[in-house]
Length: 437
Image (cartoon, rainbow, N blue to C red; front, side):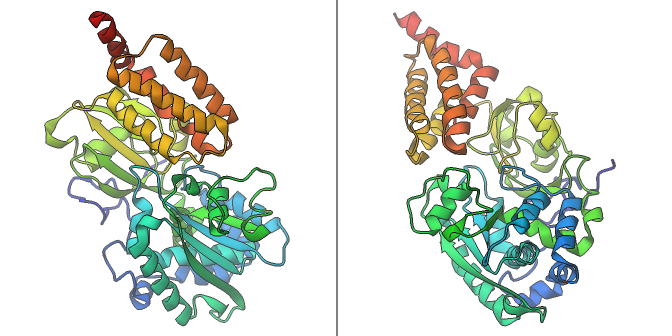
């Protein structure tokens, strides 16, 4: 399928070679994000108007037709998720926007919150209509305090303009949104943990079932989607699902916001069609490695993502190609490391992060991360033994299959992939001790 490329208006852009696109990012830095009038002038709320002209079932079918997968990391088909939420009966239903962007190296949701907040609200309103919800919450991480304040202003403007509240656009749809602040906990990016936090409880994951769609916030049927997912929805209805699905590939449809960071010439947030290779992203869009250095490795999808050596950057950026290579799109983060970075030292920073962020609810994650930290510290100091490799793999299996939530299940991913692709750097730390002895 032929890919569609349009010049982007985000990031640096000078070396993008027309490989970026501007669908959900078209308003970035082009309008006052707090102005409802400017948003309307740019085509805002056309998607909502078209959605409200259809039945809720037709809205869900259009989302399914677009092929949109959740952009928060799990990549669950959005249309199917909405269909399941709509099928649950209840006197009240809730829609939550997960804006707890705590994944290291990820900042694409911040761009949406900062530069196009009305689009998020519009997407949530379409979702509320589709699943029969009347209440909405935007859970924004504590570190985004200024964006919380801006979102409250935007919600008030939408309410005054008749795009939120009671009898939206005279259709009888009622939907109200509140902003809720996180408290700086990475684990609250997990949906059930986020819900516990909104309820005023400690941020720890719930056991499932019951599932959130059946018994979520305050025990009510709840739909939770990511910021980027909601921001795609108005675009789908504005240009049509068929047009949107022309971007990307057969199995990875549409576009994706990525956070390009690290030792890269032009770091920033870019919108790309699925199907570009990592090489194109790094060199054509990102301008290559900073200061003329050589690429050594990437980390994909955030701290819980795998490490990939420079020799494998011709892999297409799609869900299917990543899955076939043991990788995940995750949050959309792409961290670049050059030849000056030591893999072992980098892994220490990753493991220190997970040790700090584990909520401590389950033993596999709490103790597993503590033990992995001890092991990686031995590699850093040059006191590791050959048995430490076996211990890492054993702990990783226990954490993957026994941890309560995704934090513990994916925490060892980076370390395991680093050992797989850069074994010599770990073995050198063992040999260093032997030479001294």
